[in-house]
Image 1 (cartoon, one colour):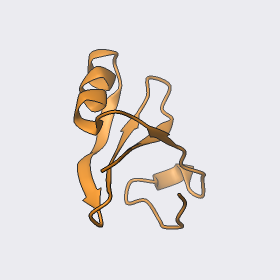
Image 2 (image 1 turned 90 degrees about the horizontal axis):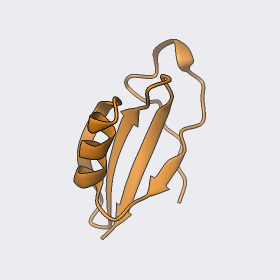
Image 3 (image 1 turned 30 degrees about the vertical axis):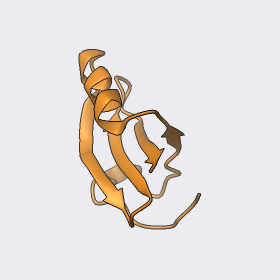
Image 4 (image 1 turned 60 degrees about the horizontal axis):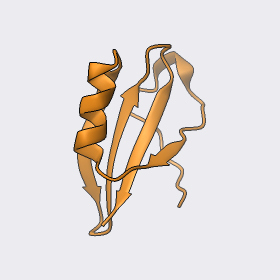
Length: 70
């Protein structure tokens, strides 16, 4: 899966590559990210009718995407 778009929170880090990790559940994974000290950037959203997605910032400031195919 791939796409090109400008991330609304890209700021000074743009342009950049945003890698997505396939997970069993976006909400559950975002909860674990917060528990580990990360920050949710975008809560879960559904792309089309086929993929749940979300993004977070890890403890080192890297932006990472999550995806779960429905």
